[in-house]
Length: 335
Image (spheres, rainbow, N blue to C red):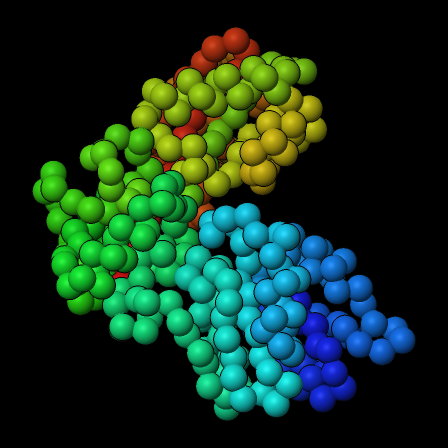
């Protein structure tokens, strides 16, 4: 986790140096000065830290932090976790993104390091109730409709039971108020599929690898069109795709690279030899073998893009000079 810290007094800076040293064992930490002749511009620091870091720590007054971050607030899905620590190191207060941004967990960790008091104000934490958004973050799940988080939390706080239906096995004992189900009646759905009951909270594991083969100099628009067709064919949520894969000879393909940039997806390429060793049953093309040295690019690269191996969940789909396939590794969640 990348953490940016700023202090506003010499005493606070000394505390920041101590905290940075303690946190650096498990985090990437940067400490800045908000005082003195060589002070950092607070507005500039906040804008940059808010856009680039996962956690911000203000060592000083809460009011300074609140006024500084206010112009940058966007969404509980994307905003980083923000903490305030007083100059004396007595209190640690998460003021933004307590659950999804990890501020509550970071506050607890910082408080333990400083022997301080964590001041946690989110209702679920204060009442010892399961926080579905915190759980989703720990499991690496994307939240398709964050507006439903409040609905789930309110029901748990009222003492009701929330039923979770998951496409994937979930190990461990469900927390109080949570029940796993395979029935048609459920409140939370964990799945890569777009199908499901209306009005429920939808959590999506971003675990699928997209395999791509294409004609030379294919435009990015054609790649995007093929992607939408593939998702529709498999009823797959776009948030489920976490990387794009292909053969080495496509490493510099402009259309694929532009598609990956637009969707902020990493692009990984494999040699023909590696693709040939992929395990599974794949469509075979003599023409593709003649051009690339392997009988199939999209399906094999999708499987190779799954850490530890994966299975095809949407087989080769071809059209307008683009072939695509989706693969997914084995996924196990836990409480």
